[in-house]
Length: 164
Image (cartoon, rainbow, N blue to C red; front, side):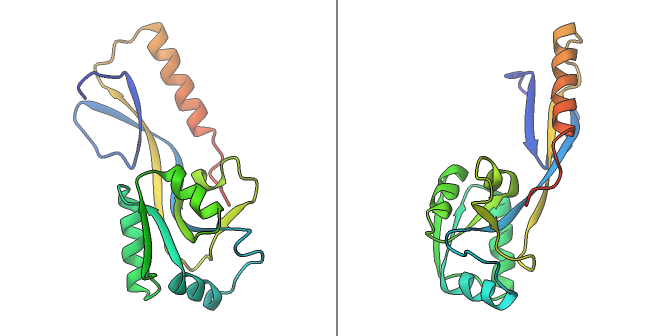
């Protein structure tokens, strides 16, 4: 908005009169677990017990994490032990180390892990996300800006919508 950058990426962007907002791809904040911590898929009762009796690791600055925590509380499976972090990569590292269940975007959890992490259970809450490309409506229509916008849009829309 302040013209500090020409293009931006935002999760669940809110409309603004000065911005063009282009949806690119979908993701979701999910309850994930390291495959090393739980080698076989759990049934719903096992997933609830693991969550309730264990620890949840999350990025406190991420609104979607707060939403999932609230939903877990309503389900009466919110663990008493909670580790709030400031960074999704730290949440990912601690979850992969088996220190608890993590709250992560599915794409962050899967990236570079090749099956080392998975959704705890389909019955657990998640928050759907849409990742958007943003730019000012009065962006100069130079050849370079148009090419970059088109390439970002094509790449973003080409991302596989299914993770996990």
